Amino acid sequence: MITPEWLSKRPALFKNFTGLEVSEFDSFYVQAEANYEEYEKKKLKVTQKEKKTRKHKVGAGHPFKLPLKNRLLLLLVYYRLYITTTLAGVLFSIDQSNADKDIHKLEPLVKSILTSTQQSA
Image (cartoon, rainbow, N blue to C red; front, side, top):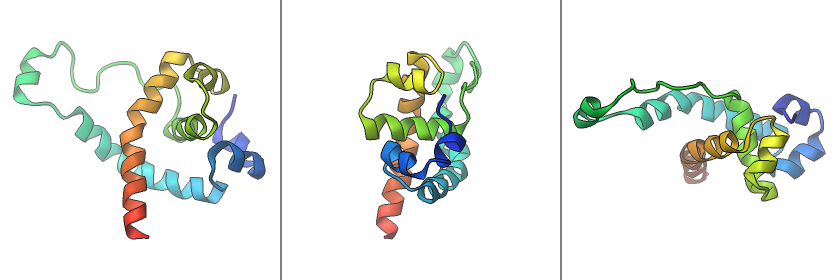
């Protein structure tokens, strides 16, 4: 199983898999972690109409199998190596559907971080 800890011990491989240096990924993760809670709240915000039709509370459901750092690494490896979500799942020891969900749920957060980083540069 690929983890940030395992891959960061192999800097050349880390760069090949993600396109980032380990220090760049760590900085990116700090930004993502700082913005993650607000991102989740905004994503899960519901209107009054939705409250009446919901069967479950906002945020109900199974928690993610991987921590945020691992899911960010998964997303970066997926895009950098242009692999299938099936292979991504195998590499990160989750099933294909979870890999797909993790990637698509984090895309807006990553895009917002990259956009704000490019604007400040």
